[in-house]
Length: 228
Image: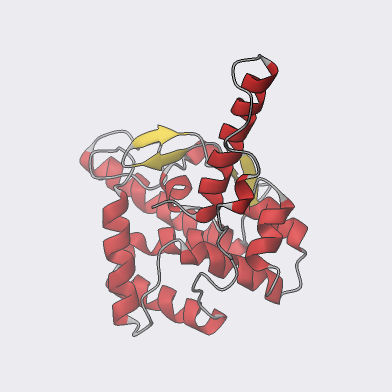
């Protein structure tokens, strides 16, 4: 059930282990030699959906009307290319309002907080529009916390109990907004691809796209978006 590339990485690791076993005199040959002969790596090109800029604007306008509590999450995804877990793992201390960037330090998957997928933190640029939306979102959360007489949560997108928001609620709202906007059904992760496609359409280099998306290597960026 894994992607061909993931299987290939596993097979390469196994091959390296067997090579070490040969050097240690444990075995005579490597049964996992040249794993590329047996594992087909999927072509990343064209394997994703994305929204055109006009569709992105329509989607956000519709979300603001029909799923207002989740609109800022959707804008964050479209304006930064952050993964869903990275967005839900954001804390207010990760946002640099003066430098206009967000430091991605963690990810939240079903309320299990871990490191980002790459295993290291990165910075993503924050547009003026997103900065304003996040500022208004923070003000609304502050007013709500004061009204309820309890401290404000450290999480940018908290649940009702102050913990990181559940991803299934985000996906439900996402699909509902798409439906009301009469747009085709895409995955939440496709907003990450949408962000990348918009950067490329605006003439940004693949190196910049790599840095913003946090890819492990430029080859992943080229394989995924080079055809655009």
